[in-house]
Image 1 (cartoon, rainbow, N blue to C red):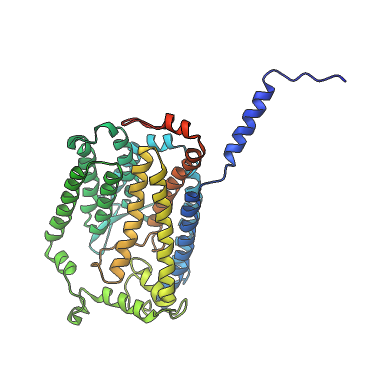
Image 2: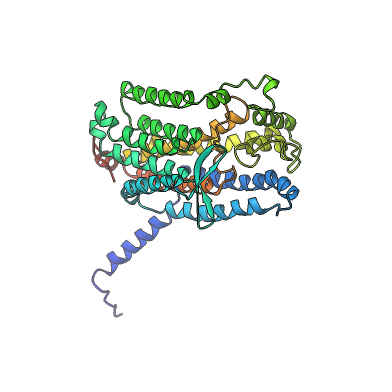
Length: 409
């Protein structure tokens, strides 16, 4: 029987093709599944609650009861595909984008001080472009986490000295945060401070060097709060005193009443009483109060459990990775999303003063939702590096593990 001669190199080419195809369809890690599934569930849950929280006032004003939910849905339909698209980006590309992302986010934030800026509730932190209102500071959160991760990656061998830890991270970070404070948005500025501190913590700096920026951050927040008598009055207001019901504590009291009305099982989806003009911003900063009123303690526990699973998945990435950039940037993003959720829930239940911090994934606001989904895409890109690291032979992992001051990617 005559054998057909194969072209030279055809066997190696076919093997390379099979290996490439196999890598493309490699099962994703548990961390990837945890982050992606919780992000999707929280986003869908948020759309349902935005519809429930905003439909009553829309009907009362003669508007379309689904208008706000549809607007939020458009940003969700844009953000979810972008999340999975970003998850396919190589880590080296994310590193190269760190500086351009920070410059772009700061430039966008500076537009709030131009005629494009919009003031609302005493804060000037929005812009209107082509008829679309957006909050640039939401994108600044992600850009700051990526930038600090990239800068500290280059300084891994020098993080034992204070000036290498602080410069340029603290001055540039303070400048970025200052653009938000210039618009009098203390809540967002506090989240940005948390991101900066979270990145420094997960970079592995010495404790004595980490304490200094913590103290500086606390002093800066206190100084800004003390600089305004009106701001201090609202922060120190005792909402147990019903004399403040019609002034500084109106929103807080109605938020707590909404949670109390729900009990264990809630009044039923769509049956909130507080959303009928009693509770200000029911679809925004106080959407968790509507969850508690309509779905009860059970609904609140479900939301908190989803955030817990999300945090567990993100922390597993931080723990398993050998790349300092991934560890620092993932730490900043995790502190941002989880910390912001804690602040929002704390405000609703009365532990913290009202500070205008939305609940990630769920609060009404297209820019906030889009920014969080983009951040999840970055976490998913990080999670894709985990299976390869876990399946590599022990000797290969040891030989490829970066030394101090070197990176693996």
